[in-house]
Amino acid sequence: MIREIPEIHLNDGLTLPVIGLGTYLLKGSNGVQSILGALNMGYRLIDSAYNYENEGTVGEAIRKSSVPREQLRITSKLPGRYQTYDKAVTTIQESLYRANLDYYDLYLIHWPLPRQDTYIEAWQALIDAKKWGLVRSIGVCNFLPEHIERLEKETDVKPSVNQIELHPFFNQAQQRKWHEQHNIVTESWSPLARANQLLQNDTIKQIADRHNKTIAQIILRWHYQLGAISIPKSASFARQIENISIFDFFLDEAEMSQISSLSRPDGRINDQDPAIYEEF
Image 1 (spheres, rainbow, N blue to C red):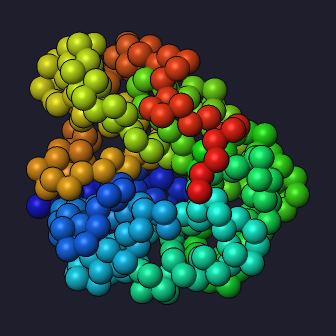
Image 2 (tube, rainbow, N blue to C red; image 1 turned 90 degrees about the vertical axis):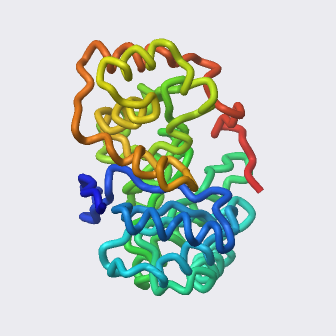
């Protein structure tokens, strides 16, 4: 059964589904089957990255799928080691060759790496790649407001998306508010966080029982009502269906607040602070 997923408009006019499939660790023939199954059941946003080493897997699933390419939204990301302009341009081309695609719908800088201080020229490479038709929309991951302000100041181009760590243990309230004020869409990576902890959380379980939904569905509905796009990863077809079956109920203000109150200053999964984190 194909599920219809609502879409959100980006500041450059492209639309993205409000929930997609994360593909980290989905590789090879098993990965192709998992992604193909997701496409068949209604997923249209597929999130990958150069560093996931599975762009070829994503591309193969797209080729095997009967879904028209123009209905899909495929994302990849530039790794830190290729943030100089020339390397970034080459890497975007290589990403396309790996997936055997003519274009990516969304291409992101994976981390700002402020100590390296090359994200401006990497951003210029993404700007040019969009002009050349290699990508349709460009954005960033894990950028703090000061990084994005510098991008816009030096290039006059603002990201359409900032993909950040966002889950009930780390709700990113200030960053999300800043995004909203600047017309940038928030996208949540690891939306279910430390699943073993979240999926046993008593507060969320009580809300789930009240709605006759799973804890994962409550969390993903929370993301949706925050206005954030979520990209949960799952190789299980049953879990993939569960994850997109979140549009037939509503969390009230008290329930949203209860979930948001689980956030804590040390809530990051791996303590990856974008102000200092160095991605390879």
